[in-house]
Length: 219
Image (cartoon, rainbow, N blue to C red):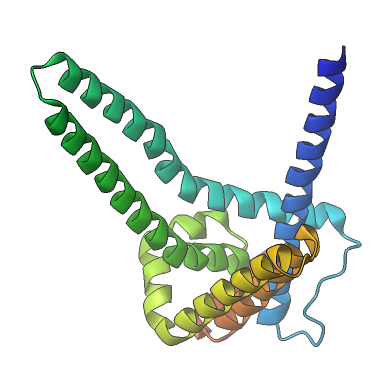
């Protein structure tokens, strides 16, 4: 029927979006690695689509695992809120007390998710870079080394974050104000992200030594 046609079209569009995003993420991984090696042309070639897709899948895995705990807490907060409101409504409480409890719960959840999301945004580039440079997914989950990387490169790390946030803002401005297409704007922002993180990795001698060791073991 017509509904099945719409479902297939929606599935096709979503599949193209997800697969395309994985390829773009793999492209960002290539930019970081070429920037680390100080290649004269930092943009990778699109000929190795299989390699880009493989790197993109690994990078997505790293990001999703880091985001998953925070995403998992969202429905738990909703369930807790529903249970709390159910108890309050069944108990002898005045409407004012119920409203005050509701507002307090919403404000607590808002503050928690805002701070947790901000902390994740500030922390995530470190495990992402360490995964890309070492080509080891396990490196992304070494919290101690990730924090040490941030401390060693505090100034460069802050500058890279500012560049990433600025490029994301400019991309959104281009989409909504200048009517630039979503894909060109987001792809440009992703390339800027890769270039900034590649420069950050290049400035860390310890990470470069780990990368050289990894390349030596794989060769």
